[in-house]
Length: 527
Image 1 (spheres, rainbow, N blue to C red):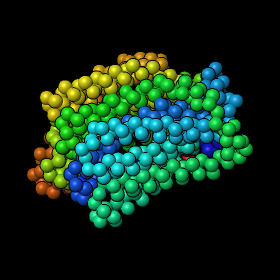
Image 2 (image 1 turned 90 degrees about the horizontal axis):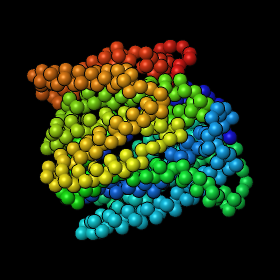
Image 3 (image 1 turned 90 degrees about the vertical axis):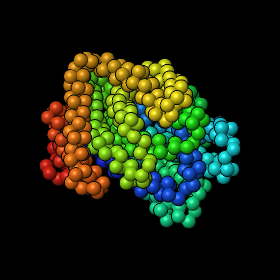
Image 4 (image 1 turned 30 degrees about the vertical axis):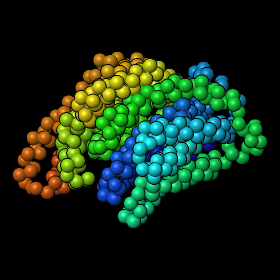
């Protein structure tokens, strides 16, 4: 079904490299773009912009798990010749061409997106009808941009299924850079949320069109197939896809309730005031999640391949190494960020926007446990299971309930506590437990070999750096220089501890890094 011009190891490295490039570009752009929005947008429009994202997140539900399923389906079919297990997915889709799967998925996804967009826009209007009409129009433009952003996931899913990883990161990074340049040049002259939403729409339209043509160019044989439109659109395909993805559809509803539902509750219970500050404080920690899960996102098709080939030992190695690498990255970030997030916010947005360390503690905890259970969930899914529906929906409903109760009594801090409590009591522990059980790993060995060492390393680093923070302030009053010094020390301390605890597990990643930097000759490097 596809060509395989390069090894899996090179593809993984390429995907990780491009995804990290995308992250660092996103981080750099966000660092400059966010203050621009704070500076040029009126306060009511700025708060509305962050509410847009919460409603836009609800639109993610509209794929009903289709995009993630496509990637797994293509990966299974692409490796069907080496299959050592009787996988139902291969039997269900072997008779259909990739072009039929792609076209059918894109067609029905477009229909569902239109229907969901109408619903979301109507809900926003009912809750915010008293706002300036231009804000409502901006929301509609923003939603159309979200539609194209989600449609771009379909060609990306097919490319990833073929293990052509990295193209999505490259194209989205380029489009995001263009969007940023447009804002920098024109936002001072068009100080309106309408302009920002319009630029967002154009950015995502370019991403969708470009990824579609890259897929066609990379897999010409797939698209050389000549069929009528009626033959390409197969209702049975979408039925079979959704029969597999239905668990993820329910999961996505719960995910939105868990991640974005509390913000919507806050906008209703507390009003839009200070929501932008809450979003910015949380945004710093979300960057840590994004960079640490790059390896996890790239590894999915390769996990599916190992599962199809019944390589159980490889799966365990992949899981342990991916978890350790992802947690080390997020803890490296958290150790530096948590120690000086007040200074970072002051320099980034300005004074009086940092909400306090009470918020930072909960954001940091949410970040750490989110990464841990995301890695486990990705492995479970690519091993053909998803038993987390009730847990995800339960977590989401608990989050809404706690956000309403605690938010009414404690304000925004109650919203943060609700987000943490709803996850730590449900998904954060159960997803990891189930994955370990599925892989045949014991909980005790995981705690001893992964969780305890990583926790000791990050807490030890944070305590040491907090002690140093008072000393640094006596050396210089320059906050930027202080952040650099604290970040450097925390990075060195944590890296040394991580290498001591996880030298064996991190060795493949360190070897790939040395090879990439030209420090060693090419050789066998595993993941």
